[in-house]
Image (tube, rainbow, N blue to C red):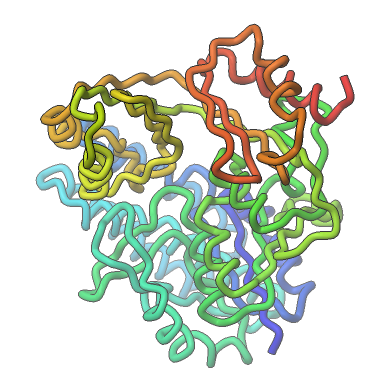
Amino acid sequence: MSLVVAKFGGTSVADYGAMNRCADIVLGNPDCRLVVVSASSGVTNLLVELTQESINDDGRLQRLKQIAQIQYAILDKLGRPNDVAAALDKLLSRMAVLSEALASQRSKATMDELLSLGEQCSSALFAAVLREKGANSSAFDVRRVLRTDSHFGRAEPQVEQIAILSREHLLPLLSEQVIVTQGFIGSDEAGQTTTLGRGGSDYSAALLAEALTASAVEIWTDVAGIYTTDPRLAPNAHPIAEISFNEAAEMATFGAKVLHPATILPAVRQQIQVFVGSSKEPEKGGTWIRHQVEDAPVFRAVALRRDQTLLNLHSLQMLHAQGFLAETFATLARHKISVDLITTSEVNVSLTLDKTGSDSSGQGLLSEALLQELSQHCRVRVEDGLALVAIIGNRIATTAGICRRVFEVLEPHNVRMICQGASPHNLCVLVAESEAAQVVKALHENLFEGV
């Protein structure tokens, strides 16, 4: 069986009309047997607000009501079938119980279970929309197969276990039904609900595709593929028909919001091609991400990642000494911090971090405990209000004239960090967030528009 896994984001399952469009996409492809959905647009943000310590009783009731309105509006359009209504009532009731429990006792495990309920609602509703169109479809609890560790808020998938469980519990269902399941969530060995971090639904789809050796993963969102840059920043940006895994990994890591950074990893491991398209306008096509591509230009895209943090570490212990970086990275590892970019001098190390590493509840990376531990062996300075601009392409490290074309654009701007050479696929600069849009627009004009 040639299997396609389709993932639909929050805007694609925002309401009954959006779900209908997505159902047509699914039913238009006989190979599409597994559907992974996010929570309906706005629901996850409301659930995150319910996890905040500052929320009061009135605020909690207001947000629960807003979530219920979003979900019941879809249920009403479906004609309120009894089984779906009962499932939805149970999930919304559980939301109220868990949000009230958090008010008296803070627990990351409780937060994860609460945050998982948005996807559970949308999967039940989307399966009902498919049945309404005549499909044999049911919702499947992904927690039965998507095994993770117990790092709540940012759980790590257990790939081998996922493969074993998916083949045992999920694969046999796909020959007879279109199965709808949840992105973003999983469970640990004890059966407790976990989440993969914000934006983890793409990752879920890729992990399940890997486990089931699917032929393709389709990521359906609200834009027609991956563009040379954000069209809101550069009006002449254009869609890219095809890119390589390496380029896509760089783009996802450095800010292309249509693709979660981790999505590429399972696809690369099994050589599964990935498609990114618009559920609103599927006829426009989209971007295919493949192991090998026919065209590999020097400049492929300009990516922007806002809200960056620069961590500056200064210590005279670095001077003609060994072990400082090892100790620093060991500290970061203990706090589950992944470093993006790094530059060093004799007595300084500068590292960039960003919020794609924050957990599902939106908690940041730089905890007080981490900063105190680092301060024991160096002076720490944290800079915020920065943005990372990445030029993505091929042979960037070995093509003459690249730096001249880039730095003539950057001349009017204060660049806080430059990283180039580690990868042939990117050149990164860190600039003030207030100047980032202007930098992206100018680079796109210079590199892609012949200006």
